[in-house]
Length: 93
Image (tube, one colour):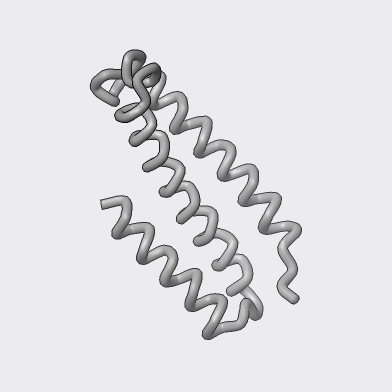
């Protein structure tokens, strides 16, 4: 499910880059969609890590424990902060 949403978001980012050449508001659209796609990839990384790495799996065997949710919220906060910084500093050449 997350993979499908990520593909749609990436399609919008590609449209902003290649069709609209990041002109006007499309620069912001590109930054937001790129950060969203990266966040989805990080979510998958977190879930897979808790499933496959023994130490993490021992802390959260079902994947629904609080530590997993805390990790996901921290990733969300980090992506939002980095997205805001990227949105302010990104200038296409």
